[in-house]
Image (cartoon, rainbow, N blue to C red):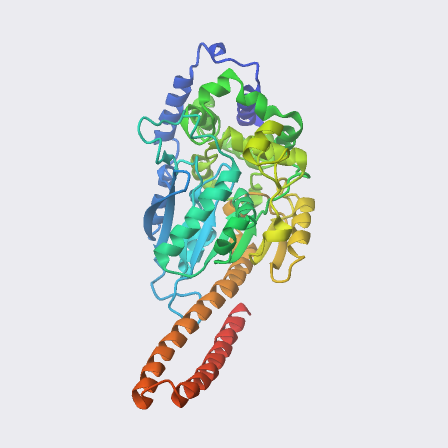
Length: 518
């Protein structure tokens, strides 16, 4: 590992040790660490890549894309930031659906301790957000509560800060029940579209599987024309991630949540606040803070190997393999990762590992009775309620979305005709290769865009045909009334013509789609 790896491991062990107390750091205070992080991050000698200092909106705009910022408020008051890519530097004429000028909306949802930036951190041909915009889609990048893009609350705005315990009282239950439905409704309203496509990664897939299996969202789920799940996670009982295994079997997160040092960070885990500065000072700024700079080639190599090539942090977090990574972009990746979430969310994941079930947060017997109305937390009913057409794409080297757990999910989804549209396992792909890999344009994007176009365009064609049929019906009705003075024989003839016209139009449209699917 070298000096870099040792520094990272020592820092993580210090963070994870419940014997550590804030007063045990007399020489380096948390404020000092925060200042060191800020100083190192803004030091022009650290990197000459300006993308290190850009957020998701700025990353897209700097590449020539037309971008918008949007905010949506959930039913429980969280204000989420959305990034919309509405135009591509490739030109305004490209459209994904043959014979249509529509721009089908697609929502990209990030994973655990990640954000919307994950879809635009690489170069345009290597970033899915840019690729879909270039193809003519209306691209929306979601951000869950607790990320740096979604740190507002309707009811906590006055005097609110990142330490507020009430704000951090959430897990992926709330992301599924509030964040995702709010994003989908907002996008459908903003675009006027009847449906949208949902592409998710990691915990983003979990949100989708959970939300779309809730009976109260059945109508909303019917407006999702396809769910493409990358590194799909519903079950994690067979995870090979050391971090997930330890969390599930040692209940370490509950201990950490009660630790004075962790409490001094607040209830957030990474991403925001002093706790984030502490962890990030160990990762993106490690060279400047602990090693005196990254000018030496050996230090650069040690940093790469420790984080991305079989080192402990890579095994913990499912970081991509070096063979798929643009090494020159590592400072950019580490300026956005890890992002923020709550300690409660991580506890929920530890429960999922321990139970091997896809179920809601376990508050204990009395808490469950009060919250859920049952002694045990209820499971999300994938078999009974989930009906969104779905494509699963997994990786053979993914320690988090383990092959056995993915197959368990696949078997459940395949029980209902029309739900599982396809599945593929990508050789040598790790958990975060799906968003950070440089070979996505060869290994992932062709398959993904083919599946996406097939479902999104079929809905576009159906919507356009319905609109055309309604318009022809209105014109025909007016003509029939004008010529006969009522709805007699002329209206019956019109129905025959309408049915014939609609049938031939539908056939032609599907032919175009099938040809496009190839």
